[in-house]
Length: 123
Image 1 (tube, rainbow, N blue to C red):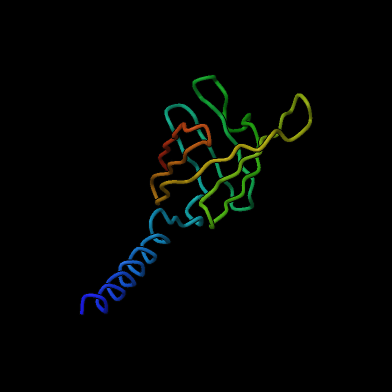
Image 2: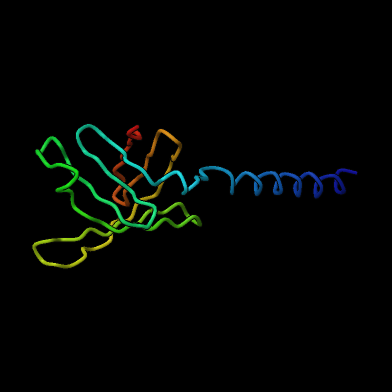
């Protein structure tokens, strides 16, 4: 009896584990567009995959912000940002982040170096 019950329990545990894997950490990328703030640093993600960043602590306004392109990959919740460098007239090396939380009011992502950034949506 034990030999027949073990495979059933084992397969049930595998199915339960597999159903949890895809749900943990899922985010809705449609929540990303908008303006976000962390301290004095602002990030604006536009729906067309472009955006801008500025820091009012450095006396930089939104109109003077540094443009960037962004792309979100739903498969692994990765956010890639590529900034435009005005001095060189080129796009810089892409920065890769993993979005760990994205709600209507909070955006948290981790840089591949391990640094975690948390932003609040600007209303």
